[in-house]
Length: 301
Image (tube, helix red, strand yellow):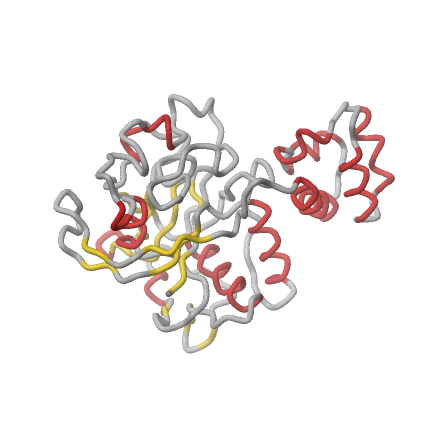
């Protein structure tokens, strides 16, 4: 049984005493990228703090074939006639090639909690799975934390101060201000999200993000086997962006005032494939935390 990486990760975290738990369950190195918090609890790692440390260590030991933090630069353009935003101009921007993963969420959240931010733990089925159970408020605060952690200007504030904690119900998202000139990480606007999902100026007019066949580019009710999947497993769209049709819904900045709700786009592993099209729109209350909603980040060029 090959458990060299597991042993190294536990040794680094000074948790080598837990190695027999992994040996007893015959857990090998080749599955550590998909081990979740719940899996570790079943194995017998009882302390939440230890489980979080192990998940982060596993993610780093696991390596990867691609940079989960990479971004695509999306050029400016105009949304096409079949969009709800037909004719609207989109300025150039950057957007994450992948939804935020459990590993990246926890890495920033740990820093944020040590620096005055308050965010819920969220949930990921494994280090490379998209983070879920995060509200719009959680996502906005996380963007601020990631920005400050990297020495950038946090874009979101409330009452003139950087937004770090608190939630304000279904209507409170209107209290959060966005500094559009800030160079930090943020949620994409809905028109940015759609422009990127369509492939921007490189769009080939696909119904889904990168293909007319949703099974090529996304996870949905008929092919997901009832679970989210690690990011980047399907084909990307024309801009090299992954998972914009299915896997998890993604929070956008925009609010639908009449419903006191914020936009989510892209469909999910639990939805019928028609909800993963590049044009489908829906909203949820900003305090919603659900196993099918995550997010990706954007930045100004």
